[in-house]
Image (cartoon, rainbow, N blue to C red):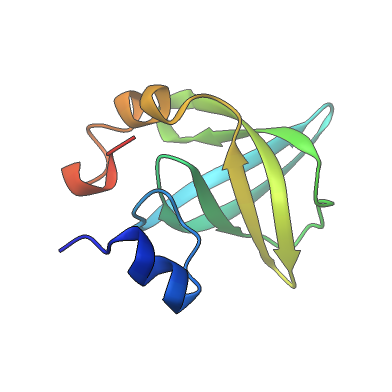
Length: 109
């Protein structure tokens, strides 16, 4: 069941897109530098990633998933080894690209 906007507001949840709990390998690429990590959850709006190398909030980089799926992302936040990534492309495009990898209810853009 999907939460209404008022319930999300009262609970402090600010997500526009439902997260899918996954375990994807990914790579962040910035110029000549890259870092391998794991994504424990993904949505049409962004992803959470765990990796050892630091990336500053606000950094515009590329997220590469398996099968050379590249996404332009921005680091929204970082807490220790976890990073919040915001897709810079439209959620509808992200949902279409991830349609075979995520459950349908997580692809609503």
